[in-house]
Length: 166
Image (cartoon, rainbow, N blue to C red; front, top):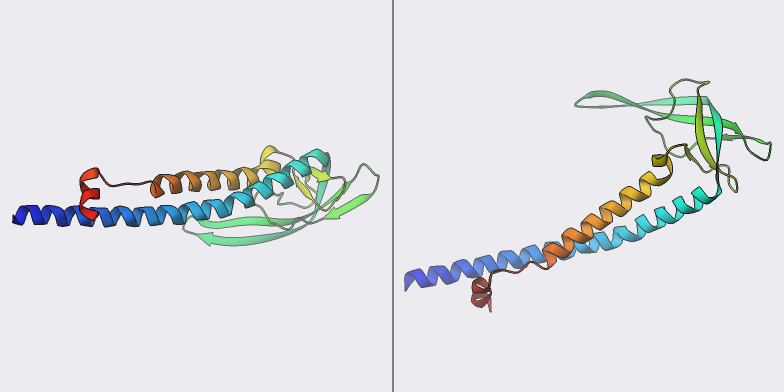
């Protein structure tokens, strides 16, 4: 009799644990649903940019170095002002809103960039990641959260534990 009571208590505890896992699953699923539109918006902007982007060679003219330190030592990123001549013949001077360790570290360095001919202040480094990286990462994270959330939200205890909770 005591063993049966302990067994029923164990199943009840296990059932409550599965209920907690399902609640976490719904939370992760909700975060994934909120992240998906951000990834979609970033992808829309990347597609729009890529349709109107033109490759040019730009010169780094003003460079600010930013230093950060972690367990592996100092790390540097650079805020760079680029100067380039657009297809319209005008010279454009643009500083991206972000800094990067991939930017050149010396003034006068020449790099390939892509710029939006409709808005020359929008530019990206002339590689795949410069255009598609942020949107791909955001959609990948959203998809992962949605998948994990669905798996956790669908978690069910074995039938024997369900009978004890009911």
